[in-house]
Length: 275
Image 1 (cartoon, helix red, strand yellow):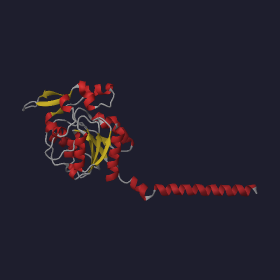
Image 2 (cartoon, one colour; image 1 turned 180 degrees about the vertical axis):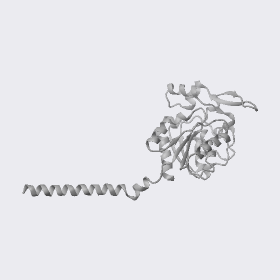
Image 3 (spheres, one colour; image 1 turned 90 degrees about the horizontal axis):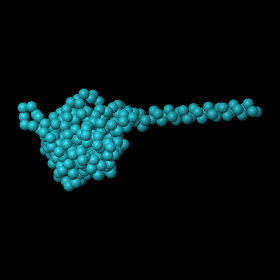
Image 4 (cartoon, helix red, strand yellow; image 1 turned 60 degrees about the horizontal axis):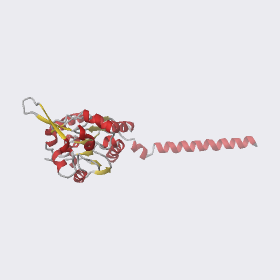
């Protein structure tokens, strides 16, 4: 009797194991699961703006790489609008698969122009960035709405241009850097950022933008509501005009540094909506 009961128990356990295995197998091969894994993830190209460099994306990059995204964060030349856009466009030229172009600050001007002519650019992501229309410049848009403290914080320094008049770079005064640029980061960190900042040339910040890629490429916009460089009102205006999907977050201008999770999340959302 005991042997018979034991056999029945073993038979029941075996049936349960087969049932669970079948359910797991069915879930793994369901259309939804197949679709989730369908095709390669796009390469995310992150473009920094003035007064910063590509290392500002380090936290965002780590999260994107953990999620399986190939990432490249090239050095934006920060010399002039057309030339900077041409350089980033040349980087996109080297990427065979789908691309998401994401940018911070003046980098938004660059991707707005660099994306033109690239059918593999599936989305534009603006993070505390400019999204200009044709003929507009970064300085024009920043001054169009009240709230920017950048102008009063800039220190001009001339630099030579062979065969031409000297150019002018703008640096943020180190004493004002944290308050204007990155008020929600530790002072120990912003002191280093101020010392290593890459200046923005007047030629780049005042250069007119070309035909905007956001008219044909879907866009997403992460607006830092405590931004003292690009007024949030200006960002809302640009996002609405571009038809962007908008997320707002309480943050300083450097939203990708203080909130890398939010930056990575909006890029993932762009991928989910365009794959």
